[in-house]
Length: 349
Ligand SMILES: NC(=O)c1ccc[n+]([C@@H]2O[C@H](COP(=O)([O-])OP(=O)(O)OC[C@H]3O[C@@H](n4cnc5c(N)ncnc54)[C@H](OP(=O)(O)O)[C@@H]3O)[C@@H](O)[C@H]2O)c1
Image (cartoon, rainbow, N blue to C red; front, side):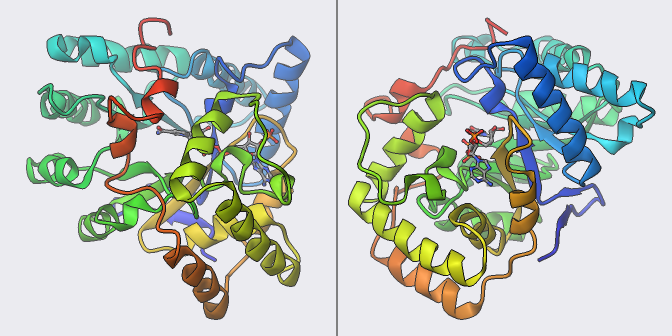
C-alpha cells in the first residue's frame, strides 16, 4: 500500500493521521503523568513517520497540547516542517447568522497562537446549518488567509456533495474532505466520493475503527448498557444505523477470520479496507498513547486481495448502513445523533 497521501499541490503526509478528539474534554487525560506519556508517544509517532496531527478549535485543550508538543520537538532539535497540524474551524451554531470576516480571521489567529505556529498546515471548515447563509463568505476569508501565508491547505469537514460542488464551483480551492467512512458507514460512496475524484479532493476518513468498535476487543461481546466515553456513544448509534448489534457481530466474525490469514487484527483489516477505496487519502485514528503505533504501521503494509474485498462487499451489500449524505443524519434535529453533538463549543475553548 502507498504509505503517503500526496495532494494535487504536492502537500504530503502519512496515510494514517493521529486524531486528537480523544484527548479533549469528555475523554480527557486526568493527570500530568498521563499527559507526559502522550507527549512521549507523539515523539515516537513522528520518528516513525506518523507526522500529521488532527484537531479542531473546538477540541478543548488539544491545540494548546499540540503547541506544547511542538515546543518540545523544537527544543530537541526538530524542525517545524517535520510535523503537520490539521486543525478545524467550527464556528458555533449560535453565531453563524452574524459571522463576520474578522471573526474568521480572529479564529484562525487563535489557532495559530495556541499551536505556536506562523502557518497552520490545514484548516478544515465545518458549518452546522446550511439554512443559515455565510459559509461561502467564511471560506473566501480562509482563502485570503491562505494567500497571506497563514494557512497552507483549506479543506472541508462534514459537508454534503451539493455544497461541496457549490464551494468548488465558486472558485475556492479545496484540498481535502474529512468525513466519516468505515465498514459501518459508507455514506460517502453515495455521491461524495465521485465528487472528490472529479475535483482531486482527498478523503480524510474518520471512524474507520468506529471509536474502537471495529477492533478485536468487541468480538463476541454482548451489547453493553453503559459507555465510558463520548466516542463510543456516537458510534453505537452508527451500529444501529448499520443493522444492529447482531449484524455488527457477524461483520466482526468475517474480519476476524480474514485477520488470522493476514496475521493481523480486526483494526488493521478495517482501516486497510477503507484505505484501498477510491479517493481515500488517509484514515484519522484517535491517538492518545503509543499502544497502537506498531499496529498502525502494520495497517499500512496490508493489501487486501480482491477475493477478500469481495467477501466483505458481499456482506455489506446486505447491510447498506446509514443512508443519505455524509453528516446528514447528524444534522437531523429529530434524530438520535444530534443529542450527542455539542454545537456551541467554540465559546468554551
Ligand atoms: N470531523 C469530525 O466531525 C470528526 C468526528 C470524529 C472524529 N474526528 C477525528 O478523527 C479522529 C479519530 O476519531 P474516531 O472517532 O474515528 O475514533 P477511532 O479512530 O475510530 O477510534 C479511536 C480509538 O480506537 C482505539 N484504537 C486506535 N488504534 C487502534 C488499533 N490499532 N487497535 C485497536 N484499537 C485502536 C483507541 O482506543 P484506546 O486509546 O482506548 O486504546 C482510540 O481511542 C479523532 O481523534 C478526530 O481527530 C473528526
